[in-house]
Length: 203
Image (cartoon, rainbow, N blue to C red; front, top):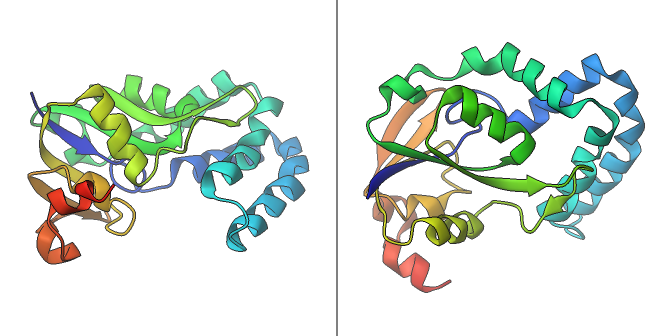
């Protein structure tokens, strides 16, 4: 099976979905500001390297328990669905598409329906915003992908983050860094100074 892998935030769309959704909710449901001290404390702990991103994202998304989440998500995508880059739209994709994102499932599931990618791997959250399992990030993206597609041949990988997505880039025949909606090809071995198979063998 041949397929392409896409990151989502700042790759298929020009924004960080989780952060923009928080701003959207702050404007439409201003009482969520009461979660601010909790969010700030978690952010400080991450900056001090006392807590990791998986731990911090729970407090950050704790505001979802205070809003009509399903309605808010639909209204959010009503506003921002049009921002998807043209090249990333369904009609312009060459083959089976798998989006692998650290974004929360309550936002990404609706994006999948609207934007029409074939499969989605992302971070799962409970109804209170707490992460279930691990944050879908770094090598965890590869682990989750290979659980579902152990024998797939990955043709293209698209991501805005050369630093954070080295692992999923290692899966692709061709790698594209996305910058302001533009796709820029690069050679994995030249960029990282290591062969893809060497990276994964070290895990």
